[in-house]
Length: 454
Image (cartoon, rainbow, N blue to C red; front, side):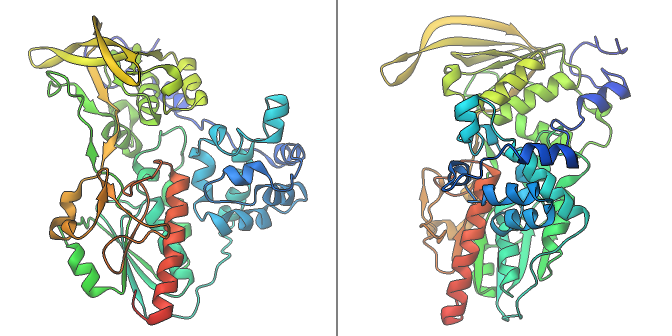
């Protein structure tokens, strides 16, 4: 047992360097050439394939798998990138078990789907390792487009616009591009600085200028962009974190799970990251699972996820829930936070109330439970922060707190499109953000080439 594991409170250095390296190694190691050929041979290459219909970016999955099976991974990668230029990251982080693989004919018949995600990673890794670029830029159009946010939606939009010959400027608030791919994905899902390698691969088409440290509403206004560019794409994601709405949640040791994951992703030394001995995570989605599992991998002794509804209501997939359980995370259902207990200003526990369904309404039963904890993570969702829009917010229609768009990604403001997590109706998936960015870019291109101005 590594020394320091039993340090009281929130502390770093709980494990040995070897344990950290092993804990944060690749969750799904890549397939080798032989494994990829064997796995691709399991595909039935269905006509009107259900897996393709389940993919938000509509990748021709049977075709790219057939290309692997015939020894053509480069051709396979092109099939993937034609629809999803961030196919490399999506292969790593997509919940394939609830998308393409869930409807795979072999899953339905045998309970063992073709490993579509791992095959997608195999093909895209080959192409990226060879820096094989499939898309030359069209002749310059002289049109300029501003993209707010260098996350999946913004990068996908920028690449498609650059392909059409438009000049793109991406304005990104953070020090690095990549958005959630860089800051919001569990470290064991994306190793070896892959997110930045993908940004470099996407932008190597040319015509894309990324300016970091540029925040909307602070360093520039939306009105500046609509005045200085022919079109604007908003892909800034979600900046707000929902509150627990529990007494005492400002105590030391109550942390935003998204920030914790971002800090972990940027850490050069995992031993420097402090984590509690007894950790409670409030939430039921992917972020809750990622925060809980990574707390355990950093050396926390006891990690408990508390979710206010039942297992069947959790946004995290069954695979993610099983991953948490396999790492020793306890998942408790039908519990909502009521009070954070603090001693000397520091978290010492959390009081929760049991819940139940009363018809269609979730209600508290009045029965309470107290868990000992020295660290509590909030993972109950993020919200869009319209304040960054400043005066333009009055002109930009919102719905349920996010930007309202039409089927092409157009907002209510002339010359402005949006996509990704910041729009109403999004499902907070990387692959969906890519599809929305790509499709909005095509709409922008049509507008710019039809009348010269969006």
